[in-house]
Image 1 (cartoon, rainbow, N blue to C red):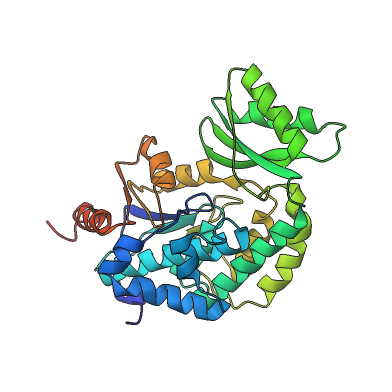
Image 2 (cartoon, rainbow, N blue to C red):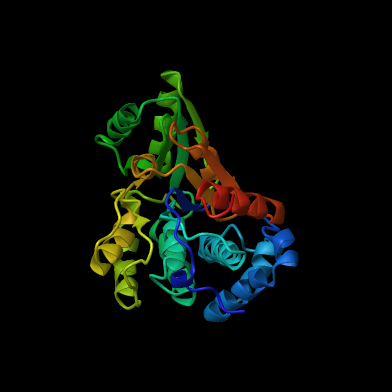
Length: 328
């Protein structure tokens, strides 16, 4: 079955879709929904053919799932499988899209800015370049909870001053939740200092320190691949990680994807932008509930949904159609 094109779909006015990044993968993801909707397996087959290896096998067995060059295409494909299922079931086209880190690529595929085949090749390469930029063990990431953003930035600057390497704020996820990334020893120093200031610090199980200046060499190589990839202006605005704005031309899409590798993810500002634009409903299009749980705490978000199972997608469909005034 061919995927529905966006011009055939009713437009929403109060709903945005968000697409998760690395950390949302789990072994066996989408197994249940794939039994109900054949399009899920079809999407994985299409992406696997483009890459030359079996992404569904990796998703279901977990073999190699934690290697970022595999994690990234698997997650992107899972998100697009759910997106296509949503449209096939009569779901509305959201007013805005946004994706957290890797999820920005899922959002761009959903917005028909790039093809699924091109996107999985890009993020597979992105994973390889990220992994090779920093030798295993030399980089780390950690979540800092309970401190203000500027406190975390100050701790990173103090730890980096005069030191070998660097540590920076990598993801501004929500008020009081900032992820840091950088040289392992400096990440550990910031974690210790954050705890001393009554914050919490949790080391993240990642193989690569994303969204920090250690990724600059990877970004320079990645920019060349982006230049050779066909990209169109998104048909639905995609709010970009680096500036919490929608691109106005294709060059800006490419620039944002390059910069995203070594600049911080402005998720707090992205969610604020969506609220400022009158968005009250957030649908998380991918495995898990990380982003919908973050959105639940926001003052102007009335309801959030995950759609990674048959019951969840059906609940979200009916609730969003009612909210958008498409059904009584």
